[in-house]
Image 1 (cartoon, rainbow, N blue to C red):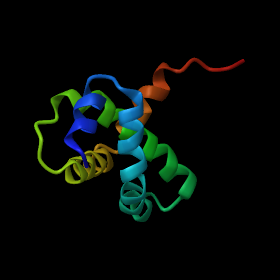
Image 2: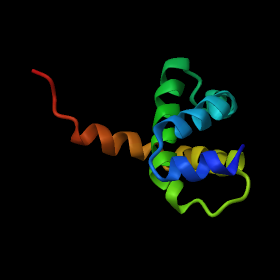
Image 3: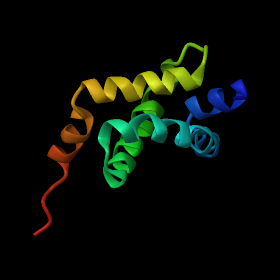
Image 4: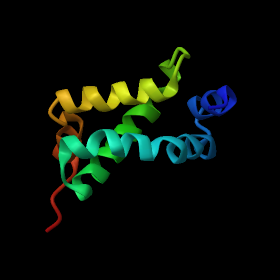
Length: 95
């Protein structure tokens, strides 16, 4: 991955972040699908992982982006998908 894409994405460039998503979504899906075992739920988890990555990207210190994203995915798994639950707690119920 071009370090320029990472730097621009960390600065808020959505197109650059889209390039990162396009490049790594297959790898991350292959990582989380055996854990979640439901393609729809895996898609939701994948979105949550990329959201966490987007928020954390300014703190990325370099190195292998693929492994950094995988670490977020594994941490997400061990946290019991708590990020998703925290988000859903703030979404108001639709009457």
